[in-house]
Image (tube, rainbow, N blue to C red; front, side, top):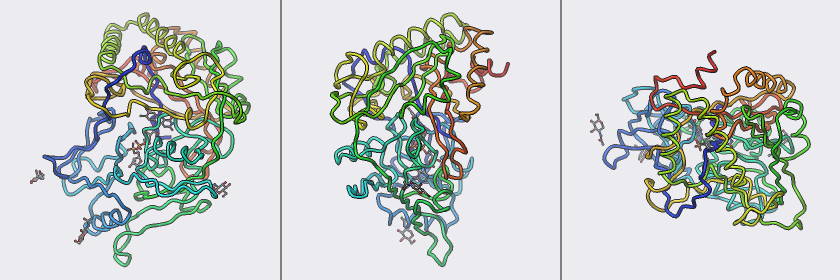
Length: 472
Ligand SMILES: Cc1cc2nc3c(=O)[nH]c(=O)nc-3n(C[C@H](O)[C@H](O)[C@H](O)COP(=O)(O)OP(=O)(O)OC[C@H]3O[C@@H](n4cnc5c(N)ncnc54)[C@H](O)[C@@H]3O)c2cc1C
Ligand SMILES: *[C@@H]1O[C@H](CO)[C@@H](O)[C@H](O)[C@H]1NC(C)=O
Ligand SMILES: *[C@@H]1O[C@H](CO)[C@@H](O)[C@H](O)[C@H]1NC(C)=O
Ligand SMILES: *[C@@H]1O[C@H](CO)[C@@H](O)[C@H](O)[C@H]1NC(C)=O
């Protein structure tokens, strides 16, 4: 899985409600207000090696016809192309053209391919252009009483991007947790030979091998222009986040996901604690109007971000394992007191279970809301301010083997009790259920996906503590 996933955060964010925030910067920048001599980066301002990639031109189609004409012209001129999105959230440099390609590399941005085209009540489906964000989709479908059953937890992703990378929520139920398994039809513009005027729109239906090749294809086969997704009628969920010690986690990991539809775990190995997400559908008459506004995805005062980052840098430079373990406890207990951003009625948290409509609790990301100045409050990872900067490591382990892995990590903690405190600074290890898919690059078997987020130095040559630990 090439995704980069969830950012879980540090400290007091949710205590400070912000008024001013700014939308993330456009990842593409070109010379002097033209669309030429451009650079692209991701939302963190850095790819794994160098900070930016180059392209000779960026182009922003707003209709499928324009897109066809762009792909045709570039194919005829034998130019290289890559597809970029409004926010560019992937950490790997999937979007980069060949390094130092000075001769015409073209970025095609889906920023203005951002329209909801159709919502079909009878079919329970939605058709969107590929630059539509998950947030737009949830909001527009919700107005018609429809929902996507499983989705990533961060709503700032585009439909093209999340299908291209296999993004997912957490479930073993229904057709599983990956958005690409809900595609009914997809339209993709691919290069073609001269007899087809150099570009072709392919309309791919679910159940065909072409569709199985195109979903999770990392943008290498063409530009996805439109997607039709299967939805369901909106339903209510009842959520309880229950903290337990981690002694049964190995056993529970393979069974918990069969017991609860939206199950996941947030594991703090150094504290030997784990949060079990007990999360299921309930009848529409169950009272509650819950809202999820996850603390780590809220707009955060830049001053707070700078303090957090400075503390972390200091602890790194002095190898202060004890300091990290104290910060880790503070972070996780603060998140817990704030119920991770859940409220029972949209305003206050009065206790579990939290009951509410699926479209109000499935994903969040209010730091995208645009008002004003990034130097006041912003998304915690905004690279325009001194904020959080991290590595993310994600891998999936099949349910039949996951117990062994968990027990190995537990043994590591016994050997080096403070070594994994660094993970808790970013809210531990998020473990989500992922499911077998017909997509060629999808999962081969049902498993648990582990998302690990941890400190990254701004100096690309430095070895951070977790990397050193993993090398031992
Ligand atoms: C805060 C945060 C939380 C996250 N949470 C989750 C989560 O809960 N679950 C999860 O699975 N992932 C999660 N992710 C990771 C996310 O799924 C991937 O980073 C996702 O691919 C990014 O989508 P994007 O729209 O930003 O696409 P980009 O990063 O811009 O692009 C990703 C790839 O898709 C290609 N692409 C984009 N649009 C098209 C198109 N129209 N046609 C063809 N190819 C295209 C691009 O060329 C590129 O190769 C999270 C990321 C962040 C930053
Ligand atoms: C882009 O760069 C090339 C080569 O450096 C230069 O000739 C050209 O004028 C530039 N174009 C713009 C629009 O800045
Ligand atoms: C593609 O090329 C044709 C012919 O040169 C031109 O008329 C058209 O505007 C070009 N399309 C785009 C989107 O640049
Ligand atoms: C796609 O087709 C498969 C069978 O090939 C079916 O099981 C699945 O429900 C279909 N998915 C959608 C979204 O229609």
